[in-house]
Image 1 (tube, one colour):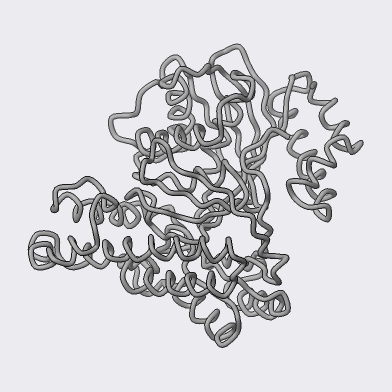
Image 2 (image 1 turned 90 degrees about the vertical axis):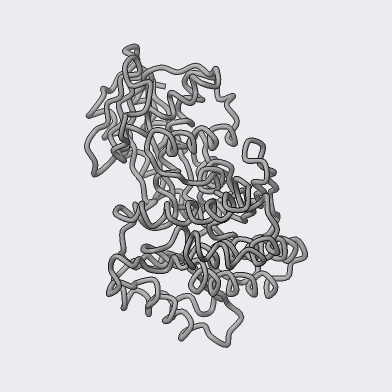
Length: 426
């Protein structure tokens, strides 16, 4: 559809049903305006006569399983109604151009940027090149395109802006050059490849899967090449709760070493016991080896490893609770996970800057507001900075939002909806 026709179709309501399914009926008008503005920006950058299409990839919220995926553990995650959207059209130059709102345009020549840089620089062009290389590696078609993207998945907010961006590149490549036939799970795996190999960040696979697949999903990464993904039929809003994410204003950008230390130390424990990842061990193996591990690895790696085993058990219990409609059982797991992340995983603040502890403060405030009520709160995502997560009774949402906004700034508390789809062509 030509760019001008695309905007007309949007404004005439031809996408209303699709938008209502993804975002909710009450959000259709705002989303139409958002997509129309993106079409205008694309047209100004790349031309009004292009055959363009609209795309969306969800942000994600990890509901259970903090820092387990990279050691082949288990998680529960959900796609949310904050997303990255794109207007994209193919070109014949074998060059991918992506202009993201607020950022410099990325230009990736697919003829030359086919392997990772000798030293990854942590730039978004590496994610684009990595996705294209991953598609080629798996035998999928690739080619050039021009895209304009805009996102309300805030960078450094713990709702996976980088995973959503990677999935978006795969989403566009799938639809433009592969008739939309590249499965979203496969896109997620290639996104992990791009981030690990080209971008230089040793992330797991949970973020990419949750952003791409959509809804609430339980994921078992025992075999990361074939993760077991199970959709969960549970409506948190209908149960009388809202999922709130509080952005404390901390930024993840300078914390790659902190994140990398978690999988590195967990895997070091596994390696000391002759295995590759902790999923190949039993908790008892680690406990029995504590004297030797302390001598060779120091202390911190051990409670991080023990967190992994306990967190896997919590995921199983919380999955069963959701399946049985037991919201209180699920909340018990959320609170226990939060305590374990703070005390044993140790990812609530960075040791590089001990005076900045926005997450600690937000968790303290959540306890003050919601303690004693049927509710739950915990660190959200990778941690160290960024966001907390809270399941707040609908009757308490405005009180909770007001207190968090007063502490961290207007609009810092986001009241979210879990959306049914992940990576899609509108």
